[in-house]
Image (cartoon, rainbow, N blue to C red; front, side, top):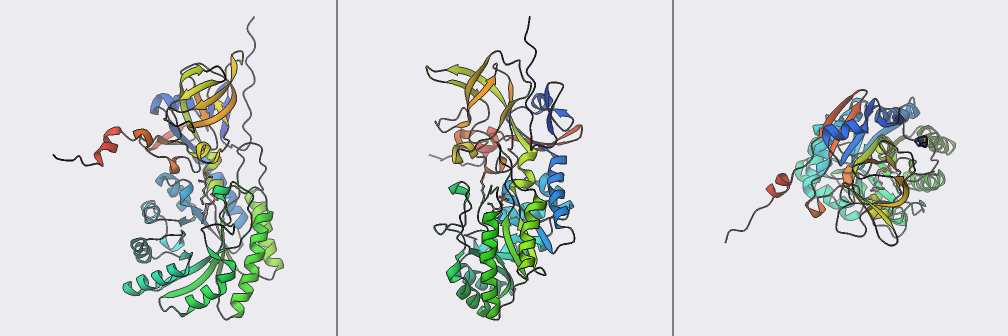
Length: 432
Ligand SMILES: Cc1ncc(COP(=O)(O)O)c(C=O)c1O
Ligand SMILES: N[C@@H](CCCC[NH3+])C(=O)O
């Protein structure tokens, strides 16, 4: 007698991604259909999940002096930027390339903040010409450079200074940005001098203050600590006659990859706004730059199992997706759920390392995962909507994956799979 199939896993924290009748579905589309139609590896996003996450933030901001600026670096696909622009979001960019994407997606330059620790003069010029809302400036040197570039263009550059509040965000060290040892921002102790200097530069207009302490933060305390430090600084700076129109508190809340229980955008934003109000700053314009929490759990990476093999010690499932497609596991030892598109009955389950074909021992997507697999099966790496495709590379001359946006029963190809010809086409051969 055959064993009844095991119940498919629940996928908490992944709205619009669920098993139905034994198949993993994104909205109304089984991912197995997508693999057949578009091939693998394939990034798949749910439009409804993105819009729901974006609406959760908008609802939390409703009626409050809050501006939302999506961090383009999390997922910069034009179609996704379009969805957010249509909902009225502005954007947080870190390069001229991201500015070009925002403009191509119909984003409003007047709602763009330009972050980043090393802006090129050409990027400054492009941003000034486009009329961005402000530059988040990270050093004295950048203040002077921006002042000169703005002067040459006959413009005035709106600036907010990014301060390093020196709090431990208690996240992965590579994605902590507010530590004393971090390259980001102006140290707290030098902030007042930087503001006084900026006030004297004729082509700059001070509009705000900014901080960002890191990403994938799942508790409120580090944000509240950072806010308290920023409020102390604001008092000090304003006491010296400099007016600040807005305070930018950086990226959004963390997401559920495994068992994390991050606050909802409403709870998170509510706590920060409450703190501001209690400190007598309730009137102040506040900006947030969420990325991961808008798109992270709205996307998955679909991959086919190419080969099953075993060593004396371990079982390996070699997939057609690799670290060049999804870098987070290799770079941060990040854990992301890996689930089958069509679960089997579990009788042949083994503990697998799910690895890619790239020639690096660090090329793994997940380690020690209990899966019942055959070659040719499809797996989905969940929570891959943020910092997935955006960080993909061509290492090993592997073309980057295609991307599909599911909308109800429809699947729209929003980026074609790269071809090897395209990759080679960028290069020049030597002529002997
Ligand atoms: C300056 C800045 N703003 C916003 C973000 C987005 O953060 P998250 O994706 O955690 O919301 C980042 C990334 O950490 C960032 O560096
Ligand atoms: N790439 C990181 C987040 C980077 C945040 C940018 N400051 C991640 O995947 O978690």
